[in-house]
Amino acid sequence: MTVDQIVKPPFEAVVAQHGATVLRVVRAVVGQTDADDAWSETFLAAMKAYPQLPADANVEAWLVTIAHRKAIDITRAAARRALPVADTPDSPAVDRADGRDLDLDAAVGALPPKQRQAVAYHYLAGLPYADIAIILDSTVAAARRAAADGIATLRRTYPRLDTARSHT
Amino acid sequence: MTAHSLTPLYPVDPDHLRRLHARLEQDAQANDLLDIAYRTVDSAIGPLLLAATPRGLVRLAFANEGHDSVLLTLSERISPRILEAPARLDPVARQLDEYFAGRRQRFDVALDWSLSQGFRRTVLEHLNTDVAFGTTASYASLARLAGSPKAVRAVGTACATNPTPIVVPCHRVIRSDGAVGSYRGGPVAKRALLDLERAG
Image (cartoon, rainbow over all chains, first blue to last red; front, side):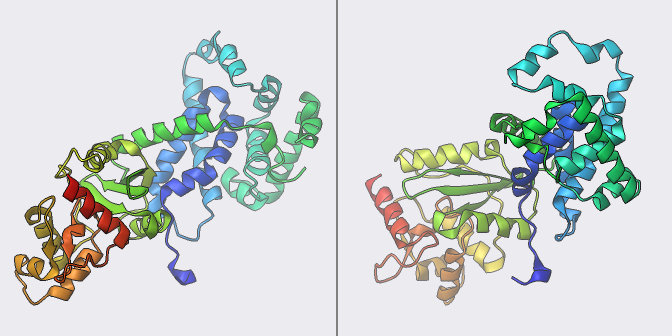
């Protein structure tokens, strides 16, 4: 098989390789409650478009781009829903069952959207700022600054950020 | 701080991903996006890969063919919209179980013939309807059945490239001198299937 005849792997391989990363990204961007919907809509849309994706495309950046758009749709839909629904009394129990760090989610959720997105796309998906700038429709410098500002805020609002990282 | 450095703070439970995968299987099926569903099953002759389009079973592969490479070929020849989604394969998996347990003599599953064209397909369709459980045919007699008595070598090629072996019973085609001949799953698997049918 030569380089210009790359066979596109089955979509199953895309899900297996990138499913966990996309779940982390959407958790950070839309929050725990809507993360499953965002993940599902992202992969369904990706599966639909997959045959047209160039075989040499950066699949992770492509998936994060789709997840970014789906997250915006979901956030808008959530804003249209009655506000009290966003704070159902049984959600903390669900959260505890997952063993999730509520402080981290609260801290990430409190960031302005652009910072939260830049942090997720760089520090969870590992995308370079050039790719993030395209997704956020901004400049490389602005994307880098948004991520840096976000991390600076998290160090204040979630002091365990650095200690947690150094223990893993 | 480097790229990916928050990843350890966001643990992902494999069971959670499995639930999301199951939901994707259902959503893809409901939206007509599941061009190929596949699963593997264990059998008396090793793990088998089963793959089906909405029209029917399109491929059955033995372990020696390399399941990953078979899926890559399906991605290239039919569609890359492929998921491990067992539900579509449940009927054929159940019938294979019954076959290997000696409780089934013919398969009742829809077939997608799109990987077999022309004379090869004609040969396999005759094989599918005219050579019953527990019997064998020679390559020459199958060539006669397919209407081209001289095309013995082409019949051999058709059997060797049968996309759905076992279900379309190319293991029942043997050499005129009685030797079992070659087989996509290897001669040992062919012998095992013939022995199974003789016992049943």
